[in-house]
Image (cartoon, rainbow, N blue to C red; front, side, top):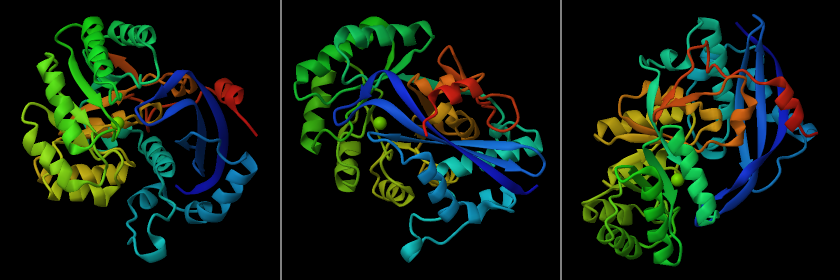
Length: 357
Ligand SMILES: [Mg+2]
């Protein structure tokens, strides 16, 4: 089965409400959708998101794609391309065609060819994956935050991650109380500071939350991403919670975290192949992993294939409107679609509605 054609779409998705954290605020997503078509008549679909600024025009996106990606794909076999390993050296570092959206589209094609759901293709047996609700709430007021929490609660979530890291400690404490009030006292509470603090400030804050009676399952990205010594110190000193980091690092950075005993839960937020390599390495260190938000929740397949994935993030974003039948979340679990490939069929009317030239 060879790849013969491609289609690109450029979409602009206005968000229901602003999302963000202690560092950033976004009101929309610019999405690029890549469809790879095979001679057998199958199509594989992959997605990329850009936040904070519009993507290039569709004409320019196609120009870039035809110049730097398409020559590596056309006439190739999806399975062979998905397995190819290149040596990242010199000017090749960060290059190549195997970007996350292309890889997703290739795996989707392989799944359709093999008539297997992606999670099974990756070795998974159980389509159900523990998930947590993620509020991305830093720029919402208390009433909006409460409404969002109530929505997640009614969807059956019993684990939630909120944004903290406000300059005013009292703000953080109030939001943690609010989360417990809405979700119930036995909610599993995770927090994300998005690099807001120093090591010392992290210790002060986490102790203050604890003194206020808040049990925190994990603290995510409290300090800057490459402070491996700092993360090692936090892992050693924060005996009463877990340190989750790695979201902002590539494979080499994740490896350094593990080498430095600088992570309790490794966030393997990347393409399928890089995430699997990082998860394999983490397993060798006896460190569990978690998965951050993935476009259209496709990370559910990867998570279902990994034996030590604690949880999958779910932020209920507008991108799920693009699916005829989006990934389902029930009682705090994500369910990987049982259709061939990743199982996300595009709603063509919605794609047309959000398309931009
Ligand atoms: Mg995060």
